[in-house]
Image 1 (tube, helix red, strand yellow):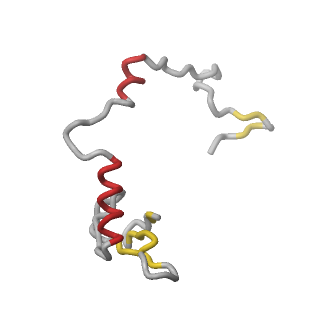
Image 2: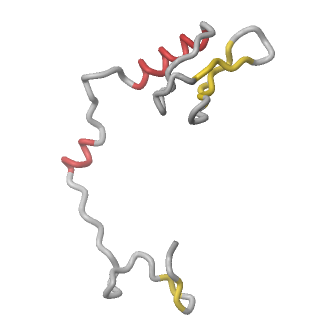
Image 3: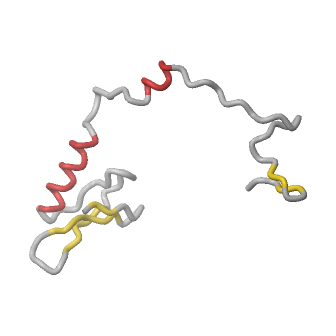
Length: 93
């Protein structure tokens, strides 16, 4: 929460009262955000695998908190409509 003094916001200022400067983002740091890890499954692989297991009425590992507590959710029909993690509350579907 920012400090307010006589109607003037002081957030975003240094201790000396000058505006803070952001560090420049180098292209190397920016490119690192989009590098793809090659040592594990992709996000697509994780979500498709979870969805297939939920559709088969199995409990799966939550892709967010990695606990084995995501259970299938059912709609008014026969099929699975997604899943919900019992630990963190993440919902798929």
